[in-house]
Image (tube, rainbow, N blue to C red; front, side, top):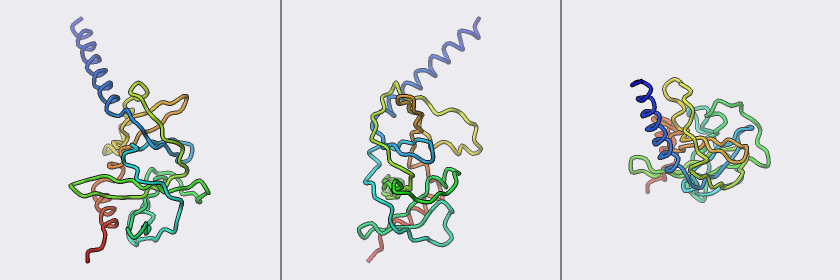
Length: 183
């Protein structure tokens, strides 16, 4: 009997934590597709969407870092999210775009392009539409960049923490590639 009551308390506190998480994550997301899967990035991280342009490969970088672009005089690294997420590389289509995102890490603002198959829409996701990400027991917590799962109509949208999509050394490389030249 005590165990059952304890489970109810634990489940109640878990529910409160899930509700708090959903409240924090509620807001507007730029949604996009990779293959048949939908993802969302906090609209406040999105600076602009640009059509596919020439990407200059940078030697000895991770396979998912496609290279850099010159966007109005600023060098921006471009990450192919398909490759980062372990999907097959595909040829670009007329729907393929680069979403330019920005975040601050260690008092440094980083701007990065993410290559996606297609931008869908800006979607308002309410707290009741968000569930915590499933515990998939991925090795090393490789899925900790998934903030939550959004539900819209019959669609499921993985809400991404773009700051965690690249981690550690990878983020350092992206930051180094996007630094403006001194002088």
